[in-house]
Amino acid sequence: MLQDNKPTAARSSGDKTNVLRNHPLFRDLGTEALDQLCHYAKKRTFKRGVTIFAKGDPGQSLFFIISGTVKIGVSSADGRGAIFNMVDAGEMFGEIAVLDGLARTADAIANSDCELFVIDRRDFFSLLASQPVLATKLIELLCVRLRWISDHVEQVIFPDLSGKLAKALIRLIDRPGAAVDRKITITQQEIGEMLGLSRESVNKQLHEWADRKLVRLQRGSITVIDVDSLRNMAERSQD
Image (tube, rainbow, N blue to C red):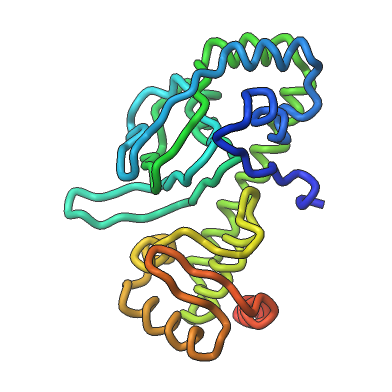
């Protein structure tokens, strides 16, 4: 059922209407409301590695990815990091602080060169007040986010590395906005930070799978070849 709600990946050449209409949050908006939303949306670009917002910043804007990938996570003073999510073209981020008006709960960093639409919190609430259907869709989106977090916590506490890593890869190719060729733009360091594992242990397991033709490794990306085998590993690790 969740498959029907996956946003279609946006293209940088697409206009605001196409980009925003493809997101399930705005799919049922009428023409006038969508035109209002498009008026509010401002395009911004970010180079790879640039911090879009930092943990503790005020939540004044909502973001939609036109192209590129954004990394959501936190880092410590000693340089260690934890990645919570990777957000792709066609997806939204930054909604938690926008809704409650409190500080950002994590950092958002451009994982590649990105084009984004940015909507001011005041403008978004103005639209929300006039569109009850939007409030319902927003509740559904937050439930999806909560399920993602629950799955992530469960994933991190898996006892075996192979099951933990397999489930992570399956979740990344199943998420909204994922590439149809099952190529995941992520480094081994980043996936280790998502799972609380060392880069060395991730590298060893991935190369073993690459030798068995389960995945293909390239610099900065992992392509899942044998989905069924990894899915079976992920399921067995929960037994």
